[in-house]
Amino acid sequence: MEAVGFVELLAAPSSKRRWSDEAKGRIVAETLVVGVTVSEVARRHGVKANHLSSWRTLARQGKLVVPDIAGAEFTSLVMVAQPVETPAATASIDLIIGPVTVRLDPATPVPRIAELVLALRACP
Image (cartoon, rainbow, N blue to C red):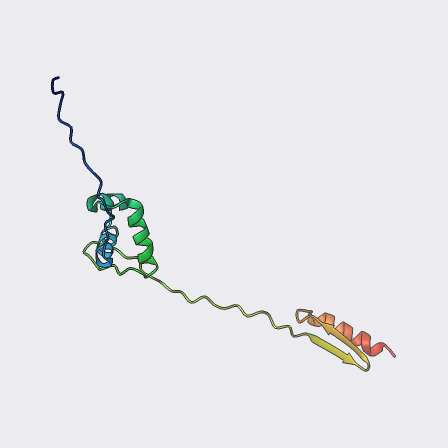
């Protein structure tokens, strides 16, 4: 038999790596640098991109502290007060002449109200 070539076998790690919260935060911070992609940072640290994305989610939820690093850009939070619309008053215009009550919408034009008052007074 003759030798054909050299083969090198690489074994996978026997156990899962555990990352400290500080290390996760530093790695997530690197993804916030302008022009850097999540997959690029994941490759650099030997982490799967989906793991890094889940760490980013934790950071967005406030469950992971992300240090401030040079070049990282955080989105600024801008709060704008929205005017609260109160429901229109349910007031009405009530014309009461004797035993008769006529309830009108507040938007009823004044000439129409005057006509109704005259008509109600004319009734015996």
